[in-house]
Each structure stands twice: as structure tokens, then as C-alpha cells.
Length: 160
Image (cartoon, rainbow, N blue to C red):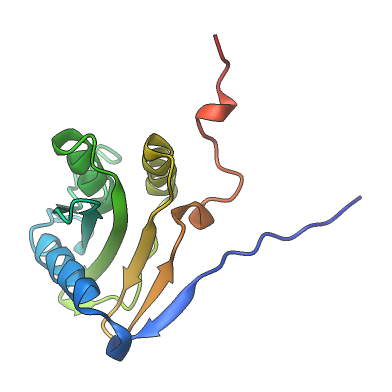
């Protein structure tokens, strides 16, 4: 038997290293989190997507009493970006979260969101940056594909 290991490259940056662009994206994500509909979990997530044109599209989690009928902030933002700007590639996705009124230090996308991130990067044939931002630091992946090693993508489907 042969054993291997998957390594995921990422950077951890402190708040003092946040660029103006990153701070702007974070501000949009925080504002989106404030619009979340989370009456059951009280877990408010905001996502901000920066497109190649510089346009920022946001999304927040939207819960539903009939789980799993709700939708995560990341998918809300990415699907909105795809619907409104179908030819404008994603450059970055930033995620923030609050539990009750307290900021969560960092949050990672769920499995379904990771799959959607793969589809979006495949749609434009280019990876994009994912930033999981907390109040004191952020975890930055320069390639969204690192979040889902051995991903299922269009290449796995039969060809006609």
C-alpha cells in the first residue's frame, strides 16, 4: 500500500496586514452578515465576492425551518454574481460570521459551498482567492481548489 498526503497552501495574516481592498471586501461581507436571516441558529454569515471588473456582490445565509432548504452566504453571493454578471470572473471571496453578536474568528465554507466554489472556478477556468476573515486575522487561500482536494467536477461526467 502506498500512502500520500494532501497539502493545502494558505497564508495567515494579521489585521495590520489587511490591504485597503481586503478591508473594503470585509466591510461588504460584514454588512451582508447583518442582513442574514438566521432565526434558528443565530449564526449570521456574510460573503462578499469581488469580480474581475471590480464589482462586489454580497450574500448572506438564509435559513428555513425546513432544513436544509436554506442557503449559505457563499452560495447566495456566488449564485447572485453568476446570475447578474455571467461573464465577469470571480477574483476573490471573503467570508465573515457572527454568533449572536460576537464575531467568529474565522469560518470555513461547508462542503456544498466548496463544491460550488469548484464549479465557479471551472466555469471561468481559473482559480480565485478565498479569505476567511476574523476580527484579528484572516486565513487566505490563493487557490479555491485547495479547499476541496479530489473534487468532483465536469471532467468526471461522461462525454457525449
